[in-house]
Image (cartoon, rainbow, N blue to C red; front, side):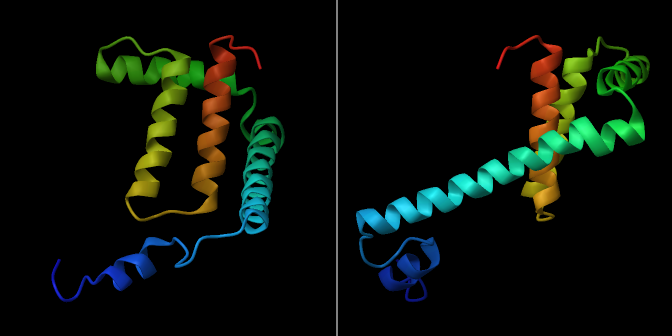
Length: 123
C-alpha cells in the first residue's frame, strides 16, 4: 500500500460506511433501493408499452426488420431476440464507457423485457 492509498482513504472511497450500520438503517437503505429499482422498472414498462410503441410501432415488428438488415449486413443469422440482446449490450457499453445515465438503465430493462417476451418466457 503506498502513502496515497491509506486504509482510511480506501474506506472513504469504497462507499461503505466507516461504522457498521444498524438493522434499521440497513432496512431503510434496502427500502430506498427497492423503490428506486421498482421506479426504473415501471419507467421501462411504460416506455416499451407507451411512448416508444406510439412512436415506432410494435417492437417485435421493428426487431424483425432490424434482424433482417443486420443479417444481410453481417452475412450471419440474426433473430429478433438477438437484436434485443445486442441492444442490451449497447446500453451496457454506454454505462461502462462513462456515459452513464438513468435512460441507459431504463432502456436496458426494456430491451431485456422485450427479448424475454419474444422468447416466450413467462413472468
